[in-house]
Length: 109
Image (cartoon, rainbow, N blue to C red):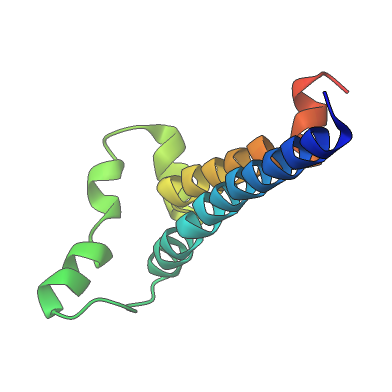
């Protein structure tokens, strides 16, 4: 192989790596508005709710949880939304797939 061909291949690989990393960052950032909005609702905010019925639905959300999972009800009582936690974990997972610390973690340090 010629040196020119090797340089061209390296630049193509670098471009593809950048594109893959970019999508990982997009995936991580795309989940954050959801987690922020769900957390605001768990803290009692009505941001994004446009009708009185929607506000009432959010306000009475914890009532069915009393009869369900104790873990979910405990999270609800301390004003933490479980799906917001899952969104943050998924965001961290997306970052782990494209960052150096994530690759180190895959190799077991």
